[in-house]
Image (cartoon, rainbow, N blue to C red; front, side, top):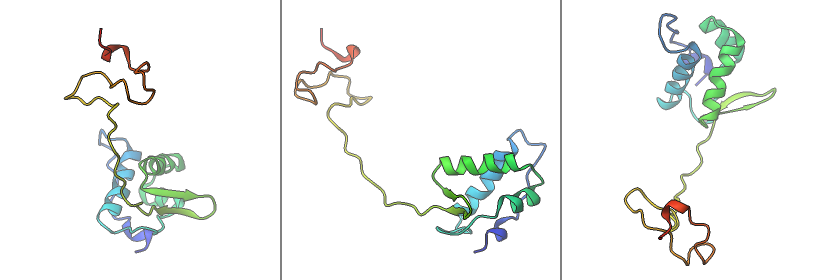
Length: 125
């Protein structure tokens, strides 16, 4: 779907929410609802500025927010695209990482073999 087709909402200047966050919310919603798919190009900065009636820096702030969230990628001279989601990764939990439910000290055999790097608050007296 064309990036311009997602520009259907307007910002609320009376809202307590900053305008750049409202713009990011609109674009995030378009991505989440499938109106913008992986690889689709977002509207240009000029199109976003014109639609929302805001300054370039406001648009850039909104785009930086989405980029920091990993939803979009930007390439100089090419535009801003919806990022392809990488396959999910499972992370193993190391026996060295205490959980909220388990507050015992690290085993002496973990990592260094001596337990010397154990934080002071988890060491046995």
